[in-house]
Every structure is written in C-alpha cells, then in structure tokens.
Length: 382
Image (cartoon, rainbow, N blue to C red):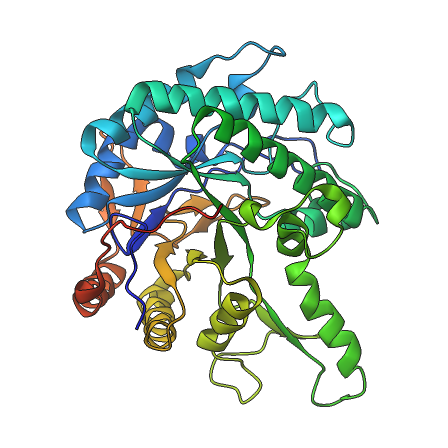
C-alpha cells in the first residue's frame, strides 16, 4: 500500500486558467470569466471548508510581461498572498496555453523568454512565501500540440506542425525547470498531460497496430522530458518529477470512432492506466484533472476514487486527485454554461452555489481516504 506524502490534502481543487487565443483570434481568460481573479480569497477559503487545502491555479503570462523583460505582478500577487495567508498550497501553472502577443512561439525567443519569466516568478514566490513551491511549467504539451499544432483549434493555429510544437514546448519546459531550480533548488514540478486509451473498432478489427501507435503517442512528451526519446533535446529523468494525469470520461475511444463508454468490455479500468504509467516512468503520479458535468459529477468522482484506491493498494504512488475545474465555467468555443464544479458562478458578493451531489461524494471519499492523508516526506527527483 502506497501512502501519499506530497500534498497537504489528498483531494485537490483546480481552477481553470486557460489564456489561449481561439481560432477567431479572441483571447480567453478563464480566471476572469469564472470570477476567480476577483474572488480568489473566498474561493480558497470555501475549498478549505470542504477539506481541500491544495489547489492548481495559474499565472497569466500575457498580462505579466506585456513588455519584454518587464514584469507586472499585479494580476498574480493578490492570489499568491491570499493563498499564503490562508495556508493553501498551490501548484502554479506557468503557461496554460497562452503567451505574450509579441512572441513568436516557433522561434528560440519563446524558450528563452519563458525561462526568464519562470525564474522571475519563482523568485517572487520564494520572496513572498519563504517556502518551496510546486509548478506545472507547460500545461498539456501533448494536447496543446494536437489541438494547436496539428488541427488549428487554438493558438498557434498550426496545421500539421504538432510534432514541431511538441519539441518546442518540451524545450521550453526544460529551460524553465533549470531556471527555477537556479532560484529555488527544492522546487517541485508536475508534468501534466491526458492519459488515454484507443482501440480498433470491434466492427472493423483490422487496424489494431494503428490504434496502438495512436495510443502510444500519449507518452511522447513525457518520454522527451525524461530523455527516453529525442535525447538531443536535453531531457533527463530529473525533468519528469511528478507525472500529472488528466482523465475524463471521454479519454477512451475507438480509432476514428466513438467514445468507449465506462462499463463496456472494451473500456480499460483506470487503475490499469495508472499502473502502466508508473511502470513506464517510476515517478509519483497526480490525477491532475478529472471531473464530469451535471448530475454525473458525484458518480464520476466515485469511480475515479475507487480506481485510485485499488491502484494505491497495489503500490502505485498516486499522490492525489484534483477535481478540475472546481468552478463552473463558460465553454471555450460557445460560452455555454459548463456545470462541472463543486461551486457555480459567483454572485456580486463572491458567493457561489454548492453542488450538493459532488460535495456529498467528496465527503464520502475524504472519509475513505482519511487514513492515507499526506505526511510530507517525499523528496524531488535528482
């Protein structure tokens, strides 16, 4: 049985902090559209009342560095200070799909500027809090490369350039980690990407090899970071500190076809996915994003928690489960109300409606995992 030790609480809350530009050119800022930028203190306090003392949150690079080399921390400092004052532990996303408008993401300047920004942010965090922090340098390198590099769904609106973007984002992540460790040698890093499963359709079972090749692609960014693939990028095991796994109900599908539904014989149990990833890398795991919409929220948490519990019993080092997004949010493309959170949208005083079904299931799972609450003795990879 593995006993988690990394985070203050086993269950975490994640604040959606995407800042990308859509294909129509509009920049999103989910911290604004959810009201979290305004009500961070209330939001952190509300989560603590529900037993969540560790969160994922984000910096907005495009606001902080509007002019090269000049940092305006006014959008970040209130969040940093209120988290510190309340004792909330934060994994800070440094680049959640967005960057300053004057940078060309394809050029070496992107890597260099991002590393300097990461070091400046880490220095500020250290000065303000006096403690070592957790960072997610580049959010979802694989998904970003697919959506923004191959299919033009959002910035940089590339088509057929996914592999090129993936290499660039890996370079940037490595450079940022080196820069942060020069400021804070004990900093921890979560490398977040989706975990998926793909099968050939049962009605046309021929392309099994093609399906497996597509499934294996989920490991490319992690492999690059730790040096298993493309070692010329400079990847080493120490760049893959904590493996962050994003997992939702639509993360399994038939090649070129429909989603594989939970409960179907072709659906792979999540515990097996976790075990495979740990066997491949030998690093601590964090379920960095998971959740569902509407009345399915509690049911989905129950499934994920049960699977994580089984993985823990088998010695798989899962360090926590992050409910993500922890707040309802407007859809990226159509701005529809996405009812995913433990809490809904804020009113004029910052109050949010609690989703009772998810809150009830969270309390139940917290009770079940109470004996495994963290002890804070895990060391970073060296």
